[in-house]
Length: 413
Image (cartoon, rainbow, N blue to C red; front, side, top):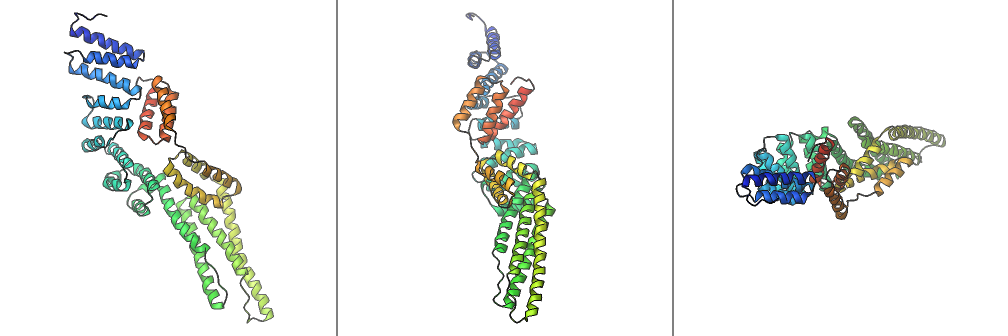
């Protein structure tokens, strides 16, 4: 169409129609070109300028060109957004573009009155920090109000930088232990105590070079077994399957070992022949008590393995976790493998061998290109979302979740 002699109103109407037709045809470069032509109209009012820029951002986002969308958005007014929400949008686009979003996140925190939304932004700042524990200290007074958000954050930080003292303090001073991630954190701290006690009791010996020493070391062993029993009872009260299995396995093992150690004790030389016979009978009866206890516990352990879905749940958590968390779960799995029945042991060993695989940049770029060429294809959006999540790009995964949700509802993007 020849626009020579057309007034500005006619040009505005023409270029707007041109933008709309290009959008319907999904010709993104044509959308951008037509919007640029509209912006070149000298008398274009502020609302129409905003509309033209919005269409350019639309085309950029659908092509996953978030750097362009970010730069365009910084020059826009967004009259329908509050100042806080505008900073949040700019922060998201900066994240998606691989740029530093901290300045926008901090502005949002200054402006926002939404406590939970603000805490989600604080979590982003902490996750992006090279010193997450220090950043968490700055934000903890706010995050305490949302323990359901704080619990997985603390677990993730602990997996990255294992500071047991800080983790223990947060378990004591917040309510994160009420949530699954907090319970996982508490369990891994307990596993440290378990390993220290296991080493102590495993290395204990009953010496028999004289009766006084023998009685002393036997009493020490009995005290250790009493502690092991308390450990098992504590795990039972906490309803923590892993700790229950490990502490029960330790208790069964040590009862068996005590039975063997008692049987191996020498008969006191001062006894007469018939007294020695009676002594041996007494020792055998006493040792049988510990063997019976071991057999009882082993039966309970077998029931634990057969009736629980914890292994399946642990497997699912391990396979979907990021690399830092996967290393944390691996420590737990390796301990369980040592005491597992053969079938479960094979399964757990296979699981340990399956390492976390981060998608290559080539795979992610190919998936992005595929979605850019067909932005309304849900399967391509889901595929990219999975790869971005596995690659640790949380912002892109969240963005694609929203995009997939809109596509499922049949809404235009």
